Amino acid sequence: MTVILETRALKRTFGAVVAAHNINIQIHAGEVMGVIGSNGAGKTTFVNMVTGYLPPSSGEILYHGDSVVGLPTRDITRKGICRSFQIPQLFAELTVIDNMLIALTIANGARPALMRRAVTPELEERAMALLDRFGIAHHAQREVGVLAQGVRKLVDIAMATVAEPQLLFLDEPTSGVSADEKMDFMGTLIAALKSTQTAVLFIEHDMEIVETFSPRVVAFYEGTILADGPTAEVLANDKVREFVIGGEFHRKSETEGGVH
Amino acid sequence: MTRADKTEWALIIAFPVLIAAALLLPSWMVNYIQVSLGTGLVALGVMIQMRAGLVSFGQGLYFCVGGYAAGMAGKFLGITDFFVLLVLGVVAALVISIALGFLLRRYREIFFAMLSLAVSMILYGLLSSSEGLGSTDGFNLPVPTYLFFAPEGDAARMTLYALTAALTVICAIVLNRVLRSPLGMINEAIRENELRVEYLGSSAHYAVHVTYVIAACVSSIGGVLWALSLGHVDPEMTNWTTSGAFVFVVILAGTGNIIAPLVGTFLLEILRVYAVELSPNTWQMILGTVMLLTIIFLPKGLWSLMGRKPKAQGPSPDGAVQPGE
Image 1 (tube, rainbow over the protein chains, first blue to last red):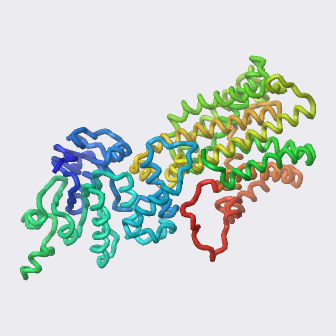
Image 2 (image 1 turned 90 degrees about the vertical axis):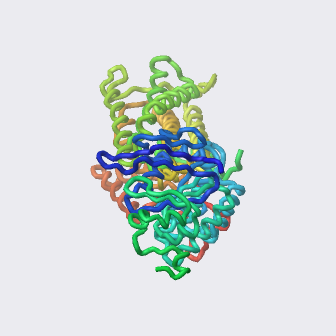
Image 3 (image 1 turned 60 degrees about the horizontal axis):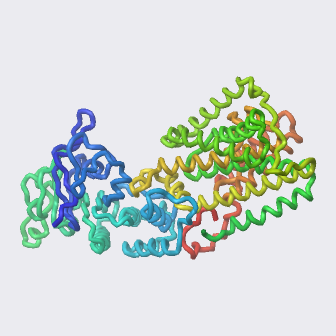
């Protein structure tokens, strides 16, 4: 598979605090990949660096072989790297459809036109189709601020996909979603994204979700990568079990086989 | 070219109504309408910035730049043609706003408000201490001519009034289209969540800069029209009290529709007339009370009364909110 993003010796410090160091990752076209790690392990810092929100202190970020270090977030988005947020970043006083229309309007042109009407029937149709793909079309006319967290998360993610990114980062997509709904939520999400051939990297604390939805996992610990590989191998890794997962998680295959 | 919406039709219809008003109403009322059309354009400039979450406490700067550019062209260059004076006023505002925009577009909320105020007060200080420009007294403008036409008396008054009304309507229609355009939509998004705008792939700085320049140009047109209507300019045009009055109008009227600030400006003029009549020494208290009551009971301004729907009515079947409708 083609490598679309590669980071080399990526490092980020905040004064004396090293938030991330020696991050070397390759992400391939169309793959789904989980990122695990406790709070403060450097997961979001990594996403913030790749998406241009934080400049790395040192190291290289190559997208299709070209460096994206120093580019503003908007330019990185336009290159095809998008993200959603742990806390949904929406236009809270506007309706769901308006949020989508804004995202589509921006995706249609970097420099906003002055005299052309922004909202057209075609654009509304596209917005509704996107909402439908994520199963939230029936919320279209509701104000975002009054929606349940799970729906807001889906709106946030749907907005991140309007530019048809090649690489999508999802920062804790299931946080705030009730335990009963997490699996269905993630199933809806991955099904919607699979149809786009987008490479998806999602940060997740729920190991069942990681095991179910990502063939590959990267484990972060204290700002660096502890393990990177097929999910089964990483989750079975002793260091990952000790420092990242903790003792309470048992892999599905082990549980099914009666091993506790 | 997109079709006219309800707001634009209302504005188009407003033009003959304004002309009829000039023929039917007493001259003092017509003067107030003419003056409030000029200042109403400045309020429109404040309004389109407010749609992006930016409160300009220094919009008087461009009101003054327009007026002084026209006045100086008349005073020093002997230019009296209305259209040339208008173009000079707009060009002056365009140049200044493009330059200042590079600084102001980086700031939001109170920082934008205070910086815009500071810049306008610098001009106030410069004009107040410029003897060649009449210091605090200002100076008079020539009676305008119109290409090769130099009307006198009532014809001159009516020509200027009609052009003021026409330009106000044209500016309002153009701004209504801007509000419905991708720029208008992105401005609303900037007000709500600038971080997300950047992450969606748009430059908030660029959108704010363009909006700032448009607001400046419209305000300068208002300045030229106002100055020609009164035949006089003085530094008070850029004083903070003048800029504050424009913000007052927009808060009073609301930002829901492009017509709101124009109507609000006229209402403020009338309110001021009656407040002075009622209480010559404490008329500001009446304005303050109206302001307080508006904020408490109509936080989205008087225009929000127009948009109220019965509770039983469902969401609009035609989809998204249309800015400016």
